[in-house]
Length: 183
Image 1 (cartoon, rainbow, N blue to C red):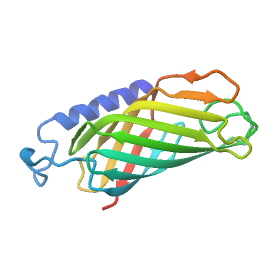
Image 2 (image 1 turned 45 degrees about the vertical axis):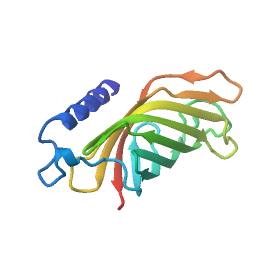
Image 3 (image 1 turned 90 degrees about the horizontal axis):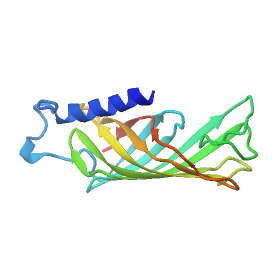
Image 4 (image 1 turned 180 degrees about the vertical axis):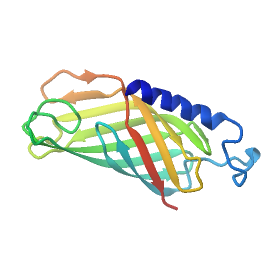
């Protein structure tokens, strides 16, 4: 899965740089417009192992600030919280609160990419804040359509801190993000 996602990310980047990727009705290269900006709102869902529904504000200058919620239910039990790490008394239900900030260093329609940082907290009943993950990473967004829809992915290095345990550090390619941009 990670290899396929990596290939997908590379293909998105290559497609964004190809001539003709922008339709004729879009701005000329000398008048290039940013993909991220406009001080508008968006909502996106992530399809992956730690899926969230996220609301975001897209600020001028290529900045995205987002807040998301995730939910996990394991009817078979097994102490897994919404961050995917073992631990805590909530053996069936997991909730996740995620705060995200992104800055697009390359931000020319239809492609944007840049650093991001996400802070995710387990907020399950009886298990709140027993697991915290800080994930620096790199985000990619692509929106070649006339519709206000974008597709994104990220790569990162989550550092998960569990109450009373050693940190967990790993590499990750996040799930695919599907975004609808209001405005």
